[in-house]
Amino acid sequence: MTKKAVVVGANGIIGGNLISHLVELGEWEIIGLSRRGGAPSEKVSHIAVDLLDTAAAKAKLAHLTDVTHIFYAAYQDRPSWAELVPPNLAMLMNTVNAIEPIAPDLEHISLMQGYKVYGAHLGPFKTPARETDANHMPPEFNIDQQDFLEALLKGKSWTWSALRPSVVVGFALGNPMNLASVIAVYASMSKELGLPLRFPGKPGAYDSLLEMTDAGLLARATVFIATNRHCGNQAFNINNGDLFRWSEMWPKIARFFELEVAPPLPMSLNVVMTDKEDLWNRMIEKHGLAKTPYKDVSSWGFGDAVFGWDYDFFADGSRLRRAGFHEYVDTEEMFMRVFRDLRERRIIP
Image 1 (cartoon, rainbow, N blue to C red):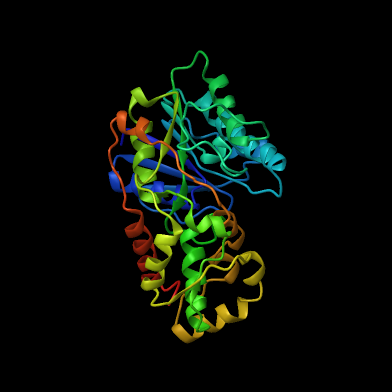
Image 2 (cartoon, rainbow, N blue to C red):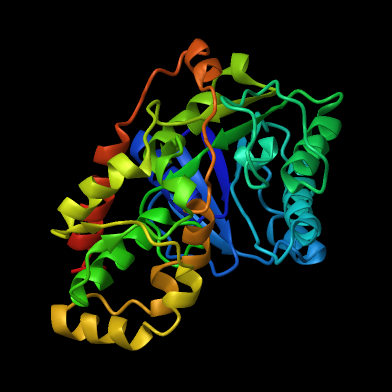
C-alpha cells in the first residue's frame, strides 16, 4: 500500500461510500474519523474524536505521520447560516492543523462542499452554476473553509480540491441529508395508510429542473481528482450528468412502490410526519423490518428543503469531464437502485 487516507465524516453518506470505494481499489490504508467511531476491518481503522475539541484532535491524530490524503466530508448542522460557520470551520482547521505539520508525505486535501457555494440554498441562483462564478454575500462556511486551505497551501507541496456535488443520493442511516430515505419512508407510509403518493413540496418545485449526484459516482470522482496532479488547487462540480423534473420522476417513484399518484399538495414533512413514530414501529413488526429507530430513518427537514426548491437547481459539470473523468449515472436508475437496496436491507417493506 502506497497511499494512506484519512476520511473525515466516515459514517456519513459521502464518507461511508468513499471508504467503500477506497477499500475496493485495494491500494489504500484507510482511517475513518467520526464522533462515534466505527467497527474496524482489515483495511479500515476508526478513530472516535470530537473535532471541535482542538486539544483532543491534536492528541488523537498525533500518530498519523504517514498520511498521504485527507478527504474531508464532515458536517455539523446549526439553526442558522451564521451559526454554521464556527463549528464547521473549526472541525476542518483542527483536523488539518493536527495532521498537516506532522505528515511530510501529504499529497492532497479534498474538501467536500456543494451548491451552497453558489447560493443555491438561498433562492433562485444562476444556472448552470460554474466553478468560476463569484461568491455570494457571507456567511458561508464552505467559502471560509476553502479560504483556509488556500492560505495554508502557500509554500507547501501538497494540493487541495473543492468538490461540489448536488444532492447526494445513496445509502446511509442516521444521516441528516439522505433524500432517498426521505422518499422511501414517505412512500412506504403512504402505502401503509392506503394513500396515493403526493408530492409534498412547493407548487413550482414540481416542475423545476434538477440534478442529483450518486454517492458512488461522487466517491470515484473524489479519488480521481485527489490522485491526478493536474486536478489540484481548483473546484469541481460533480453531478450525474442528466436533468429531471419531479413531475416526471414522481410517477416513476410511485410505480416502484405500487402507488397511485395524486395531485401535489404543499405540506411540511417536518410537521405532518412528527406523529408517525408509532406507525413506523407497527410497520417494523408487521413487515419484519430491521429495528431502525424512527429518528434515524429519515430527515424530514431535509426533504422539505429539497422539495421547496421552486427554481432550477443544476450546475455545469464539464470541467471534470475536461479533466478526464467521464462517468455518468442515470438518475432514475439511481433512485430505483437505492430503493431496492433499502428493501434488501429490510429498512422498508
